[in-house]
Length: 101
Image (cartoon, rainbow, N blue to C red):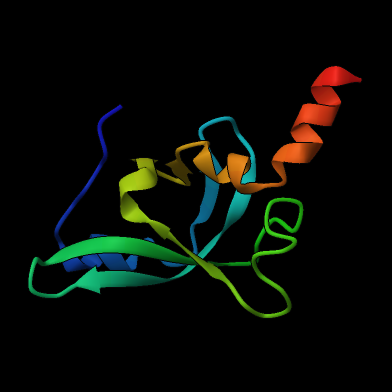
């Protein structure tokens, strides 16, 4: 459950281009950039592109991306794992219908 955070610049820039998945294994997107708090010297968000269109149909259209808070990051390795909260952003009505059906 601990977040993996490394303050070395080389490690931070190496996050760009990594694929992001929920901790349930659902592809979310790819890191295109980082949001930084320069004063606090910390990464505060991941700017994602190449989004999973099933998760972000209404949120991001065309070439837009999304920024996920870095506090959602669960682990960083070959890929980045984030909390499954991003999956719950997708239309809750659909999920309710699937449970009832």
